[in-house]
Length: 191
Image 1 (cartoon, rainbow, N blue to C red):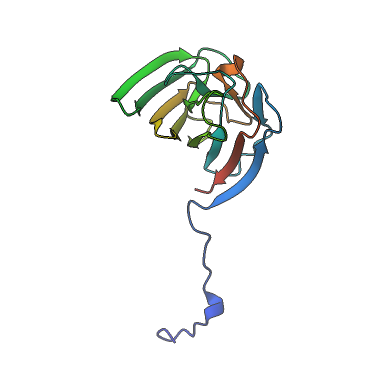
Image 2 (image 1 turned 60 degrees about the horizontal axis):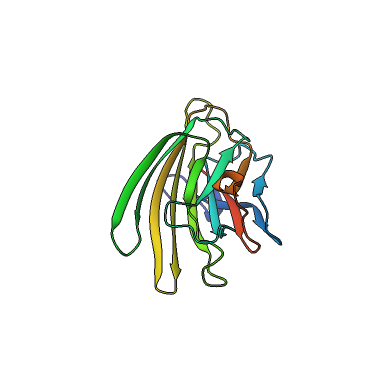
């Protein structure tokens, strides 16, 4: 009893927690491929998150020489930009690019590295369906290749206010292939 009000447990509604993750789709490549695409992404969430394990067909890319590239809505125009902070055991570095043709999802390990070693990344696409702002992406990625490797933090923007309805992931924007076994899981995050 609360004051003159009788309250039972059935009178309380427990809302879903903010930031709840919901699986949308997962792509695992059965063979080498130029890209992996998530189509028909609904505007049902506040943010999107990609969880990725990937490798490129490029033989021995140095850090910064091969990237996981992400294009929104098949847009390959020069209206993306990115900044990067990264370290590879010998030092820490930073750089950036304006007028790129893709979101930069992070560095990529090449096919000449240790078998079954893939780069790992967690990539957030913020307010992806908001038609009143440009889209922002942040990525944390890294790899340990038997004692060598790197870790990096990227931020990217897509200077477009359209809702993101598709994402195409590739190795250097299609210059190389994503290798078989690369896996990309897309999640929606409730606001």
